Structures are given as structure tokens and as C-alpha cells.
Amino acid sequence: MLSRSIIRAYSTQASSPLISSTLLLSRQPVITADLPEFENQYHKYQNELWKRLMWTFPKWFYYREGTLSEQNYRELNKNPIFNNPNIEFPRGRPEIRHQRDRRFKQEIELPKTYKEAKEGEEDDFEVTPGDDLSRKIVPNPRITDADKNGDLTSLERKLSRTLYLVINKEDKWILPNFSEGASEKLTPLHTMAEEGLYKIGGEKINYFNVSNKPCHLYNNNNGKEYFIKSHILSGKFEPQEPSLKYMWLTKGELGSYLNKDYYKDIKHLLNDV
Image (cartoon, rainbow, N blue to C red; front, side):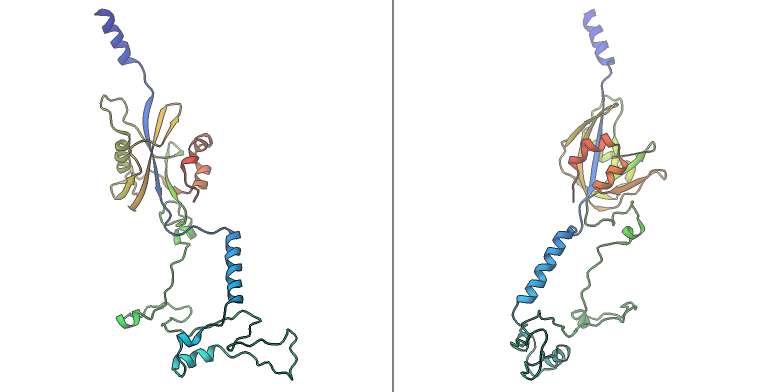
């Protein structure tokens, strides 16, 4: 009995590695990815080739002959020069088909049917239900104010890229890491990460865990870090301590702030887009 009690005492006092939960919280891309320069040139070439080879624009299908809209179309799109045998054409004689010179691509200007504000003025007129159908559809810009101002704490930056949350701890940028310290009560890793996120960033965050199981293990000098992957759906990260610094960074930007060995070990977990 004496030997068993001694062995039990030594086993409870033996130091064990610290187990912590690291939250890999990401914001997924909001818009489509930016195309590489080669793909942009390819699509531009295909578009120009399609314009060059396409048949004549069927104005008769969209503008009935004799209507006011057809007259507006004629004013914007003049008929090509007739192939007059008495005139010399340095670039070759016109090949007219359905009021189009088949030697060149057809550029069409369509009459505007929507109400536009003058250049330099904001469209602040009051929209009625009847005017709503004729308003011009203008897509939102891909570059936001956060991109222009270089605000690394905004979720509105880099809409076409995946962003990851990093915080500053002891003058070092790390992924949010949480541990429960010395305690007999064992807390699940995903619960530890969730409670830690709410503790430092408030409860106005709507997110979900990809899995309750860790996706990666990193062995550091202090212990073992188990990574829990999560995605933010809505809400905002609001630091509960005024001194807490945080940023939302892309995969490439993380390499400039995280420890090199640390980043090299976890970069396969990060999204390239």
C-alpha cells in the first residue's frame, strides 16, 4: 500500500505538456476571385474574336421598324459607306451585309432607357415604383474604402480573398490561442476555442466550426497546440480590451507577421484564394 501511494503521488505531481486550443477563424471570399493577367487577356481576345465573327446584330428583333426606339437606334448607329465603284477604298472594298461592313467587328450603341445623373453629380432623386424598372444597374466596386485606407482591421477588405484573424500578444502576432491552465476539469478543445473567442471578441460574432475535431497539431516549446478551423458568417469582432490589437490578413500577409517556422508549419491549412 505504501508503494502504491508513493507512485500515485509522483504521477499526479509529474509535469505534463500544456494543451491549448488555437482558433483558425477565417472569413470566406465575398466576391469572385480576381483573374490572373493571362486569363484577362484570354477572355478579352475571345470577346473581340466573337465580335469580329458574329453575324449582324438583329435590330429587327429588338426594335420594331417605324417605332420611336428604332429611330433612336438609327441615329446612334449610322449605316456604313456604300460600296461605290467610283470611289477608291485604301483598306479594301466594303462587304455590306444587312447594313454592316463585314470586314470589321460591329460596334453597337443602344439607346438609354434608364435615368442617369449627370457626370460628377450624385443620383439623389426619389425613386418611384415606376422608375425603379428603368434604373441603370451599377455593380458595387470590387475595391472598398477599407482597401483604399489600408484598414487591416476591417472585414470589408480584400473581398475576393480569404481573411484570417490574428491578434497581438506580448508584442507578437499569433493566431488566437486559448488554454484553461492547471485544472482537473477537462474542457473540449472546440468549446475552449469558442469561449475564448467570445471572451476577447465579444458575442456579436456568428460563426460555425468546420469540425469539433482538431485539424492540426503544432508542438511548441510550451506544449501542444490543437487547431480548430472555423468560418465567420456575420457579425463583427469587437475587442473586449482596449489594448488588444487584431488584424484580418490573407495567407500571403500572414507570412509577414507570424513566426517563420510557425507559418511554415501551418500554411497548408490556409486557403490560397
